[in-house]
Length: 111
Image 1 (cartoon, rainbow, N blue to C red):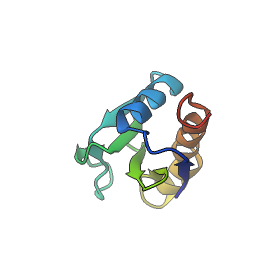
Image 2: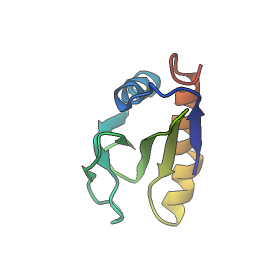
Image 3: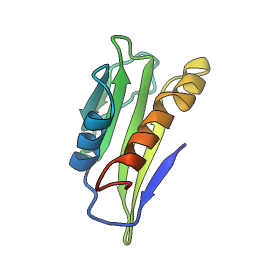
Image 4: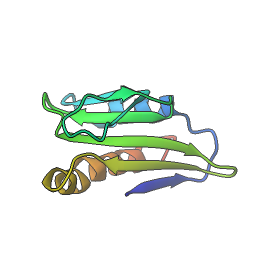
């Protein structure tokens, strides 16, 4: 599970969501306050404000969960790929890796 560690405590889920919207193209939906269900192809469900679902395209097979975790001296951003079996591998190598790169390159977050 990829994690981006930011040596600051002022990183908000709003800032992370804005960075994802700016860094990903229009084919991606950024859904703040939502989480992936364990049911394959299930719709995202309401969750904590620090959870964000990122999906691509009309089918929810390409998706990942982004969770902002506030620590005492830093912030972790955990990226969990969605899916089972082949989808999980595809999302690990695809969308999760892309999200990590976007966050590392985002002004005010990674760079």
